[in-house]
Image (cartoon, rainbow, N blue to C red):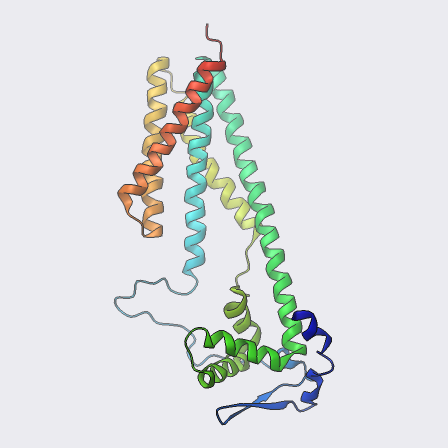
Length: 288
C-alpha cells in the first residue's frame, strides 16, 4: 500500500495542481495543498485556539506532559529496586560461602559498578533504537504529507472515524487538525509519537545509572557495619526489606495500584532472591 502510494505520488497526487484541489464530504469543501507547494508540510503552523487544557476541579488525569515525567519517575523507582535486589543478592550469595567482610565488600562493589553501568548501557542502546525508529517514522510521515496530501487527509479522517466520529465530522476534524499542524496530528493520532518529546537516550542512561546506584548502595553499606556476622546478615536483610517496602509503595502510588499487594510482592521477591543466593553460596562455597 505504501509502495503504491509512493509510486503514484508524483503522478496521481500531482493532479492537485499548483493551487491544490478540493475535496468534499457531506457538502463541505476542503482545499488540499498541492504537491508543488510542499503539500501539508508547506503550510505555516497555526496557533491553537486553546493553548493549554485546564483540568476541572475533580480531574484525575495527568496534565499534558506529566505522563512522560511519571514514566521517568517509575523507571527510576524500578531502577533503584533492581539495584537493591541485585547487589543484596550478590552480597548474600557470597556471604553464604565466605563470611569475610572484605569478600562482601569486593562482591558488593563489583555488583554495584557492573549493574549500574550495565543498566545505563542497556537503557542507552534500547532508547537509542527507539529514538531512531521514531525519527524514521516521522521522516516517512513528512514525505507522505508533502507528496500525498489528499491520501493523508483521508487517512487521518478514517482514524477519527474509528474513534466514533461520523464521516463528515471526522473529515472536518482531520482537515482542521492538519491545517494547524499536519505532522503533529499524524504523529500523535497515527503513530502514537509526540514529535516534541522524542525519547532521550542520554537522559535515560543517566537516570538508570543513578537509580541503580542509589538502590544498590544500601545493602553494600549495611554489609560493612562492624558487628558479628550473623547480625550483619540480619541488618542487610532488614535494610533491603525496608527499602523494597518503600519502592513498592512508591511504584504503587505512581501506577495507582493496590499498595498492600504491590509492597508484599516487591518485598517477597527480594527476600526470595536473597534466600536463593544464600543457598547457592552455601552449595558451591567453602567455608572455614
